[in-house]
Image 1 (cartoon, rainbow, N blue to C red):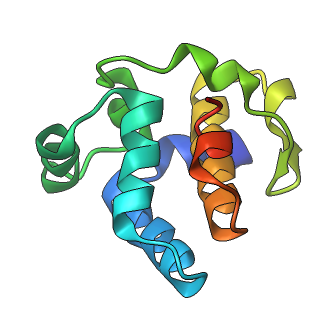
Image 2: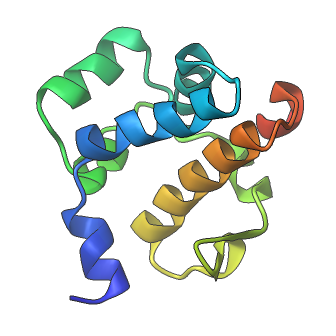
Image 3: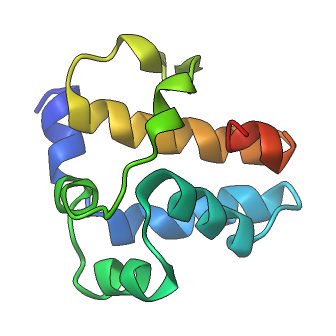
Amino acid sequence: MNHTEKIYALKFFGVYPHYIQKAERKGRSKAEVDEIIFWLTGYDAAALQDQIDRQTTFETFFAEAPAFHPNASKIKGVICGYRVEDLEDPLVQKVRYLDKLIDELAKGKAMEKILRA
Protein backbone atom coordinates (compact mmCIF):
# COMPACT_ATOMS: atom_id res chain seq x y z
CA MET A 1 0.00 0.00 0.00
CA ASN A 2 1.50 3.34 -1.03
CA HIS A 3 1.31 6.69 0.78
CA THR A 4 -1.83 7.87 -1.06
CA GLU A 5 -3.67 4.57 -0.51
CA LYS A 6 -2.84 4.73 3.20
CA ILE A 7 -4.30 8.24 3.45
CA TYR A 8 -7.52 7.13 1.73
CA ALA A 9 -7.85 4.25 4.20
CA LEU A 10 -7.22 6.36 7.32
CA LYS A 11 -10.16 6.93 9.64
CA PHE A 12 -10.49 10.49 10.93
CA PHE A 13 -11.78 9.35 14.33
CA GLY A 14 -8.61 7.27 14.78
CA VAL A 15 -6.25 10.18 14.10
CA TYR A 16 -8.20 12.92 15.90
CA PRO A 17 -7.14 11.81 19.44
CA HIS A 18 -3.51 11.91 18.28
CA TYR A 19 -3.95 15.53 17.16
CA ILE A 20 -5.27 16.37 20.63
CA GLN A 21 -2.48 14.45 22.41
CA LYS A 22 0.18 16.17 20.30
CA ALA A 23 -1.27 19.59 21.14
CA GLU A 24 -1.74 18.83 24.84
CA ARG A 25 1.82 17.49 25.21
CA LYS A 26 2.97 20.95 24.13
CA GLY A 27 0.62 22.85 26.45
CA ARG A 28 -2.09 23.53 23.87
CA SER A 29 -5.74 22.46 24.10
CA LYS A 30 -8.40 20.30 22.47
CA ALA A 31 -10.38 23.53 21.96
CA GLU A 32 -7.51 24.89 19.85
CA VAL A 33 -7.35 21.67 17.79
CA ASP A 34 -11.11 21.94 17.22
CA GLU A 35 -10.80 25.63 16.28
CA ILE A 36 -8.26 24.68 13.60
CA ILE A 37 -10.52 21.92 12.27
CA PHE A 38 -13.54 24.28 12.25
CA TRP A 39 -11.53 26.94 10.40
CA LEU A 40 -10.16 24.54 7.80
CA THR A 41 -13.34 22.56 7.12
CA GLY A 42 -16.34 24.67 8.14
CA TYR A 43 -17.53 21.99 10.57
CA ASP A 44 -19.03 23.03 13.90
CA ALA A 45 -18.82 21.01 17.13
CA ALA A 46 -21.95 18.93 16.41
CA ALA A 47 -20.93 18.13 12.83
CA LEU A 48 -17.39 17.22 13.95
CA GLN A 49 -18.80 14.88 16.60
CA ASP A 50 -21.04 13.31 13.95
CA GLN A 51 -17.97 12.56 11.79
CA ILE A 52 -16.27 10.96 14.80
CA ASP A 53 -19.38 8.96 15.78
CA ARG A 54 -19.78 7.69 12.20
CA GLN A 55 -16.07 6.72 12.13
CA THR A 56 -15.60 8.28 8.71
CA THR A 57 -12.47 8.06 6.62
CA PHE A 58 -10.52 11.22 5.83
CA GLU A 59 -11.98 10.95 2.33
CA THR A 60 -15.54 11.25 3.67
CA PHE A 61 -14.51 13.78 6.32
CA PHE A 62 -13.20 16.20 3.69
CA ALA A 63 -15.85 15.36 1.06
CA GLU A 64 -18.59 16.30 3.55
CA ALA A 65 -16.79 19.39 4.89
CA PRO A 66 -19.28 22.29 4.74
CA ALA A 67 -16.77 24.93 3.62
CA PHE A 68 -13.10 24.16 2.99
CA HIS A 69 -11.32 27.42 3.83
CA PRO A 70 -10.17 29.45 0.80
CA ASN A 71 -6.98 30.46 2.64
CA ALA A 72 -5.88 26.83 2.96
CA SER A 73 -3.74 27.39 -0.12
CA LYS A 74 -1.62 29.74 2.03
CA ILE A 75 -0.49 26.76 4.12
CA LYS A 76 3.09 26.04 3.06
CA GLY A 77 5.95 23.92 4.30
CA VAL A 78 7.04 20.36 4.90
CA ILE A 79 5.12 17.79 6.92
CA CYS A 80 5.99 14.10 7.08
CA GLY A 81 8.66 14.69 4.43
CA TYR A 82 6.22 16.17 1.92
CA ARG A 83 5.97 19.81 0.81
CA VAL A 84 2.23 20.43 1.26
CA GLU A 85 1.89 23.00 -1.52
CA ASP A 86 3.33 20.52 -4.05
CA LEU A 87 1.07 17.55 -3.28
CA GLU A 88 -1.00 16.66 -6.34
CA ASP A 89 -3.72 14.47 -4.83
CA PRO A 90 -6.38 16.83 -3.40
CA LEU A 91 -7.30 14.55 -0.47
CA VAL A 92 -3.68 13.91 0.50
CA GLN A 93 -3.07 17.65 0.35
CA LYS A 94 -6.05 18.42 2.62
CA VAL A 95 -4.94 15.81 5.17
CA ARG A 96 -1.41 17.22 5.14
CA TYR A 97 -2.76 20.77 5.48
CA LEU A 98 -4.48 19.65 8.69
CA ASP A 99 -1.33 17.84 9.86
CA LYS A 100 0.70 21.00 9.21
CA LEU A 101 -1.71 23.22 11.17
CA ILE A 102 -1.67 20.84 14.15
CA ASP A 103 2.13 20.74 13.94
CA GLU A 104 2.26 24.55 14.00
CA LEU A 105 -0.03 24.55 17.06
CA ALA A 106 2.22 22.06 18.85
CA LYS A 107 5.26 24.19 18.01
CA GLY A 108 3.69 27.14 19.82
CA LYS A 109 2.74 29.27 16.85
CA ALA A 110 0.11 31.96 17.55
CA MET A 111 -3.43 31.00 16.54
CA GLU A 112 -3.77 34.08 14.29
CA LYS A 113 -0.78 32.90 12.27
CA ILE A 114 -1.97 29.28 12.18
CA LEU A 115 -5.36 30.41 10.85
CA ARG A 116 -3.68 32.58 8.22
CA ALA A 117 -5.49 35.68 9.52
